[in-house]
Image (cartoon, rainbow over all chains, first blue to last red):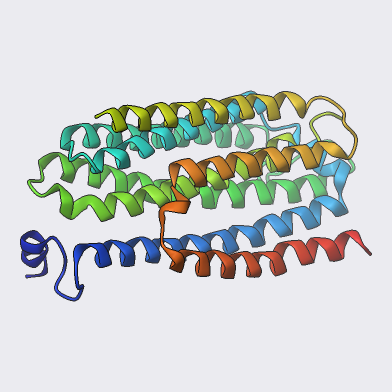
Length: 218
Length: 91
């Protein structure tokens, strides 16, 4: 019923017009993104707190991460943001197939990021750097190093979870857009999904220096 | 169509800047700048985040209601992050 209404007037019955519907959708997404910023802000604050208490242990632990892989993965995620921005741009021109292609490309780049991340995780398992009974680090500062890896796995893990959700959303959108006859009905979904995807990118932009780069020079 | 091409060119320029900044922040992290290393890393991250928000998320294209949310988010984040960290560093 609602979908039928959306197709006829391009907006659902409880909105005055399509523009109001679009404003409500994007504003809702921005509220959600603001809550995400505060959520990750808390994690970053806790990280800074512990890092300040144990600077040399955190620097030592940080050097166990592979900075080449980390920066390559940053580039992958930045590329996915580019393809996402282009996909949202296509919505204005009604270029259905091109938009579907860019959405799928974005989701695939997200998968590449996750694949590299899981390679990194596996590496940490082999090196016994995963916090828990198996953790082993040959240094008097091992407990503090373990604390760094608690932050590493929680922060990158929560970020990866966001990516998994984003990939599912973009995958479905890419598939639906390819076969839809009413592209304008999908425009809001694609724009809000784009905002979400860019925020995941921004969170990684901060995670990368905090986890991989600080303490690298010593 | 011209607008479209211009839009994509802007996206590519921003994307290039983001990649250059990523390489720069990675390289500079190996150079010993003393206490400035952290400041430089955070500044570059903030610059990159700003580029994404401005050019990919088009943060300025939304109406005034967004600024209410951004200001609220900014105030809470300020209390949460900046005040806590300020407390830590002034003990």
